[in-house]
Length: 278
Image 1 (cartoon, one colour):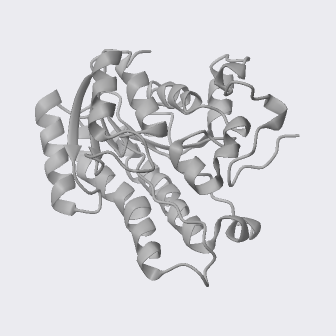
Image 2 (cartoon, helix red, strand yellow):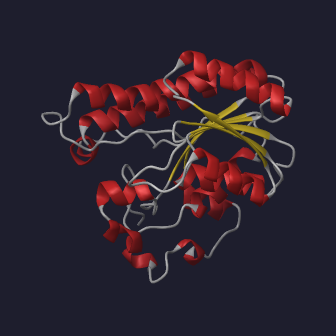
């Protein structure tokens, strides 16, 4: 299966996992619209929406960088309309934009709480909602949200903080609800989450640069996302998927290609909300 000629709209994507997913799709010849705020270089995070667009074009795809805030209803509505007009439709929505703060409840500000929930849960709902009319016209429509399986084990609320856990689970609830609501139209809604820590600039800033050797590269998420959105949307829906399990089902047996230089499989750190395999 290929994404040649398919049209994708993604929240975020100026760097990290989002950019990796976009350039993997572009290698097939896909059209990719990016909705992101980062138009100018960030002092601590490399990459902008424009460098990501250049990478998409260099990989063989067509890019449409749209600068704005996923929390802004008018911007999202206009961005979806522009994407559909530019590319002749929308086949795939990728809810990638996410804010993170692992602070405990007693330490986090309500401003940060609102930011995470507005970007993570509300942003995913808004972009998905705005694209439904276009997805109905696609012959293989997918909504892919980068969010974890929902676990009610209380330990996760202590590990990741109540506020961040609520914000990420809100994204997963979007997947769960839309998979059922949109089933009759053959529109798939799935979530994808990494088994291990992924080496991105954002993760290094939050967890420290020493995590790099204990992380996989963003390419594993890009390859897993590609495998998901090339599945038949009428049947492959309502799942909370883990990156290496998706690829194992595709026949991948060697995951060492996703290690950073000097990294070892046995040293990889598990991501949040993922239990060790036996």
